[in-house]
Length: 558
Image (cartoon, rainbow, N blue to C red; front, side, top):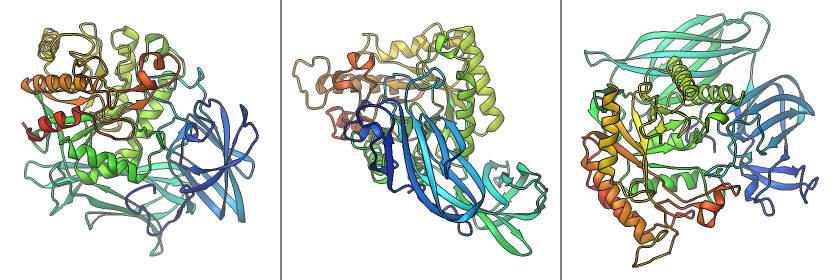
């Protein structure tokens, strides 16, 4: 299952995931031995591969002829794609999709092999031992499309609300031409059942995009947390009256704005009651099936939360589809956590970060649930080099999407030199856990720090929390007890929400997650980051009811 809805009615497409592939590791005691594994999956969940790092092959077959497009939703960390023994593509980026087109296939059975590398290498600048597990494998879905010489790549819809109350949209459509000559087709686009575009196009060889402004849409209901109304987008290509390609997506009509110290959704100031969430499960690694994702979101809703931060990478589109449908706001960020200035000097770092940003925004643009684009969690925002990186990445995001504010989570107290760059200032803090300072004092100090620089923007506490080992109860409330975690979270949340200067918070974190065994395991009991409200199996800790009691008393808006 790749999406919660069908993305084509005309184009023939089929899923190559959701079935067994041949898996052959290249290293270790099982080197060269082939076994059947499910795709998608994480190789660290296979028996005997819990800490495997290195190369491995995934192989399957498919029936096709003519032109095909293969799309991989996520392969970690590095992938080389071979069709019938010939390398056709390579890609670095564990959490972003990529595709490859192959033309002129003869009718019959074809072999698809993906060589995966989940090792830590200098040229993989975003993957290194970290406070979460960097899983390997084909961790998200794979699909095959049968395409012609011209096909639709993506459609981006940007809703705008006029002062009169009328909704208009800006539509951008990308078409690819696989030939070496100019093509010819009629491009049509409908939104919310209304035909908006009918335009003759002549795309040159390669990729070409077409932009249409001020398209009026009538009779639509705005998307909100309380009423997450979605509308279908359908683009079509036709020749001589026959539709030969289509692309279906969804969007919602909503505006996200920053005004003074508030974040506005459709003109109303939002109160964020959120969780940071890793894609992690002891049975599935980061390759959570739809049922497990839905279960997580049901728990988030039960807790009274209204937002999730995708720490620290772009998430599976199934997750975003469900957030769209459930009215859950999403802070989605690029893949970068805790990099030092030295790591940011890696020559691969900046281009790889930029590629993640481009892929993330291109793939996820239409999701109304996404209200913030984030970057570079707890990186070197206290250095001149760091500032250059933050500035460049924010500039790139704004060149791709001006409809959403940008932010980053900082921990560089009184030293951060980048707070003028984002639209929203966000800070990670752990009062009563890593120090004894109150949350009120921390927020007041941050506000003073920003005020001295003339910065008056919305403020979010992007991480707050405390750790606990599931089922460790202790009346003395010692460290790692559920009792202490519940007490600390109760104080943290009460204090933060008492400060109207703050637009809300994200608890670190939703569930306990596995961490890299190198270095991090020595600081994390059970080799887990144990700050979850539920453990890795989603069993609630004492703090669950404490947080639920606080969240449920607070409205979604100020």
